[in-house]
Structure formats: C-alpha cells, structure tokens
Length: 206
Image (cartoon, rainbow, N blue to C red):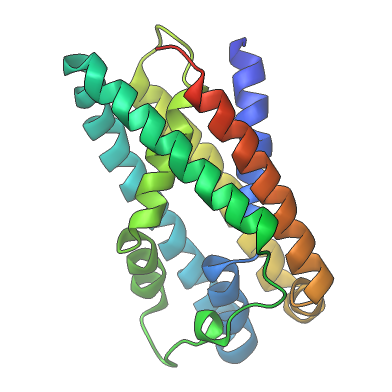
C-alpha cells in the first residue's frame, strides 16, 4: 500500500472506532447532559490526552522491541492479530443492545480532564489496541516513532471532532446513539472491520 492508501485506511478505521458508542462516548454524553458543555469539553480533552500518552508508550516501547528482536516482533504481531480477531468476533456475535448504565455513571463535580485522561491511561485495552493496530499502517522503512505519533494524532483529531459534535448536539445525538439498533449495527460493523484487520496483521511481513 502507498502512504496515501495507508493514511486513508487508518483514518477510516479510526473514524469507525471513534463513532462506535463506548465508554468515552458515554462519559462525554453524560457529562454534557448533566454538568454542561464546559465540563464535557474538559472530559473530551482528558480522554484524548490519554490517547497521546498511550501513543507515546507504544511508539517508544514498540520501536525498541522491533529493533532488537524479530521473534518478539512476530510474537507481538500474532498476539495482536489474535486480540483483534477476538474483539471483532465478540462484537459480531454478541453485539450490545444498549450502553451499560455503569459506563454512563460518573461522579458529579469531578475533575473531568483528569477523569477522562485516567480512564484511558488506566485501561490496558487502549494500549493493547494501539500495539496491535498501529504498526500495520506504518509503511515499511519509515520511522516508526514519527508515524505512530502521526497516526495517534489523526485518532485524537477525530476524537475531538466527534466529542465536539456530541457536546454541541447533546440531546439529539444522545437519543440516536442510545437506540438498540444503532448500537447493535455499530458493534457488528466495527467487529467485521476488526476481524479483517486481524487477518491483514497476521499475514503481514515486517
């Protein structure tokens, strides 16, 4: 794939991931509805700051791993493919029909930037997803660290745009995203994409 193809493919996949209702969407919606737009914006900035921190950890850690060990790289690749396949199959076969009340619950009057950031930093699934997902979009022979930060930045921009949209139209979008058929469709679509990317990662070469 060319550099442009890589960027288009990643942007599409990241956009789909961003639009799929989950913990981050639930937190932004709940905060905007209950505590107002300013607090919701702080939560959104915190969520994306957490993504940047995970991106930094993956960029430097994965770069060192690839540099020293072909075996470790292949092991990581297959573990990442297995994780993506497991995640995708779960979404395909057992899609949600609603957002969990626990996901939407949050303590009022919290530091929303810190809460949003720590929600991502303390979630190892974000790091595992980045490790398994980002490397397949880095063109061969290009700087892994620079490309990882670039790809994470695309994800962050998409996340901020989506959060801003949620905050700006809280009631209307909240009602749509809480519909059973929308959540189920998004889970199944994202699951299919994850399975396809798992296959791509498993058969990719260094």
